[in-house]
Image (cartoon, rainbow, N blue to C red; front, side, top):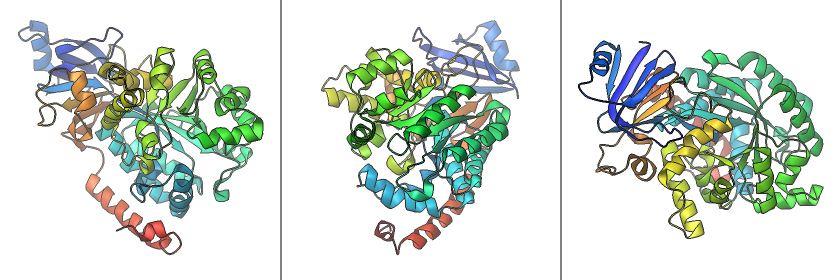
Length: 462
């Protein structure tokens, strides 16, 4: 069924005009959107289209939006959600993330990645950026990428790496990182009909030497790759680069040549005025992860100021180890509420602004604003239908408000990626979810038992 019609719902195209089409329709042919407009019952052409289209979906009581972009996550952390909910970042890494990730086997990365991809799809994200930095086996990365393919999602995998990682078993030389990235580009770039892309992911600035970062900048520039980097997530990270280089995080990123239009500054909490101006001038994007920042008590990014300055801001869930889920609709409400209370200003970030960050802002960060991020003719048919006929949502005055403040991932009914239906009637159509979850739970139970004797936090899990 190459042609599909979704009609009779509220359509938020997220176009420049901020249109609200009620009732509206989206007509898809192949992997592209062909028409978006008002649905006029009785219109002869539209009625004929409804009668002849092979796939028709009546979206009465529902809202149709572009697929959301989850601009930062760590899919392998699906195995780590809820191990402990009360540790700052450094302790969280040392006591949970590193031990469990080092115990995981290649098949675990596939299972964790597949659950994570499905979770993203079922909460409205058709595109994700996975920052993958656990390379105990090259099969770990291929497992995550197989999960991309098998789930039907679209996205980037940022090949992470650090030569001074706090966990010595995760350290890698620059030669190994860039050779492995070359292999990924050869084997995976453009896979699954163009759904899979590769980015470069220097892990952070406190775990990388200056020489490593300078080589990463040259490598990314030569290959026109996105550079996806944790920056200024905690105040301690600023202290680290000041002591080592006499530079703040963003200043270091700029000096080594890693700051440009294809740079994604992940978190960007502890940035001063000059650093924000530099991001604006270099046309980089900031990836805001409000739930993770609250969960780890890292701080509050200056998102309203960034947007007023013209900086592109995208949204991310961060990994399930610091969220603990990847509910992309939930992120919308946290984004709005965090900044209202931080500034004590209830007028900040109206719903359409939050939705813009989650759609066109994410697409721009990925270099895909020309074909993703909004529902317009000629763009890829990546779209989501959310059911608003729910007791926690209806009655609805404004669909944008209902999406940001009421809806959650359980309300997503239909998801399409490149014209292909991947979620229908709230179920992933490409994967046996129950069997997948059963296999993953058995593996997590075994890993927890293995780690319990050495790490009390795992022994305390019930």
